[in-house]
Amino acid sequence: MSTTDEEPLAGSARGSGAGLETGLRTRITLAVVLVTLVLSVALGVLTVTITQQTLVNQREESVSSRAVANAAVVDAALGSSTDTQAVLSSLSDAGKPSLVTAGPDGRAVSVSVDQRFGFDVLPRQLKDQVVEVRNPAIMRFELEGQTLVAVGVPLGAAQSGYFEVYRLDDITSGLRSLIVALALATFVTTVAAGILGYWASGLTLRPLSRISEAAEAVAVGQLDTRIDERDYASDRDLAPLARNFNAMVDALQERIDRDARFASDVSHELRSPLTTLNAGIHVLQNNRDEMPDRAQHALDLLAADVDRFTQLVEDLLEISRFDAGAVRYEPEEVAILPLVRATVSNLGYPDLEIESDAELDDLVISCDKRRLVRILANYLHNADRYADGPTRVWVERHDPDPFNPFDELTVRVGVEDSGPGVPPDERERIFDRFNRGDQGGSRGADVGVGLGLALAAEHAALQGGRVWVEDRTDGGEGACFVVELPYLEVDEHEPDEDLAAATPEAASALTLTGEHEVVRAGDPPPGSDR
Image 1: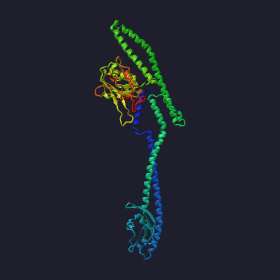
Image 2: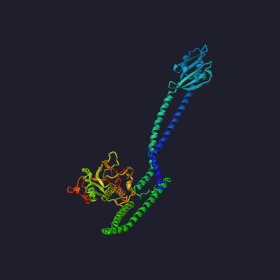
Image 3: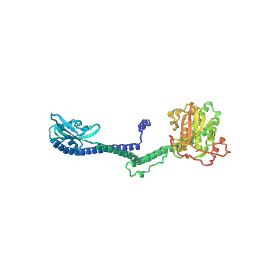
Image 4: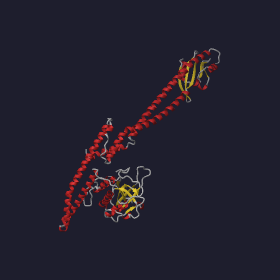
């Protein structure tokens, strides 16, 4: 499968992953919380249901036996002249007793101790079952928001029955207290499960975090990074992952080393014939006046192409040194403004405007001076080739964002031009190797080889900085190429040193007096996307 065929698949994978708003650890924690919550709720519902059923059944058995005993007392009293109301009131351990009998005219007559729970409020089905069918019965029902249980017992006389009504308020209150306690226990259990799940998932995913850190180190070029397979030897799931990761990095490093050696070997082999060609062209140029016009034109084309080829070989050699890890970072304490002024002047732009705040006159940064000069030179030459030369150079201090703990104090140098600019979708790729934007297929003496900006990015990254391109600060047509490096500030310097007239060599000789915080320049700044 070709590279172009694979790119849509990779893009779709990234697109699907972008929709996930939670990480793996969060999803594991949420799963533990959800399972705990469901189990706790189910257990709580089951507990309440069983408890309610048990208490109600016990209460119904108790009141049923009590109602049967009281019904026997009432049935015996009906044959005497005892007042029925008094009999009902004298019953012990009764609920709300009531009695229904057939009157002299055959119509039902009811007597109740408490009319709120008398014969008239009893469910029709219960009354028919006791009075008409002559079967004892018990039934629960709702009355004005209260849960009641009613027991009916048929008496000896026709069309008569004895009923008792009992409240279940104590059971309802107890169940409510139980529900509140179970809800509180469910909440505490769920929170505890979330905390435990988050902690346990962290332990579970810690090996993957280590592998992720190793992969990140490989991604930024630390190809000697490996995972200690002994740490995962006892884990049959992670051991293959560690082995495969190390094998992948080994293969990647071998391929990169092979490509770097090839580029380096080819560049070295090309140096000798290029030296011969340059010497021959130099001899021919010394005798240029003796040549016809067509030969002079051909000599000019040949000299331009050989110069371009020589630059390509030199850039390839430097790129191969970066790939092979053979470059060294040599930081110095450099006065930034004198260095920028001297670099711009020495490269043939003595009248180019350089803007900066007055407070930056004493600014000293910790950087590799030679590499910073190369970055500025590449920016200026790039403006010459593609934008009719630079129009302005500026230096500014970037203060850290107080709300961003990863932001740091840096210094930025920008080179602006008035060319066609760089489209937003090309600003990332313009620092890729052999990328020349709209000039990608062009050839000529004024067209570079596409490695200058790539080398600028490598030089900046080596110093813990970064590079990018943006619109001009004044909003005009053109582009602004920026390099950002960490810096340290000097509070005082020797009064006889003339910083304005300093050269790069003089700038490197400045010494710091007093105590100053040195920003580590070997690591890329946090938040950098390059």
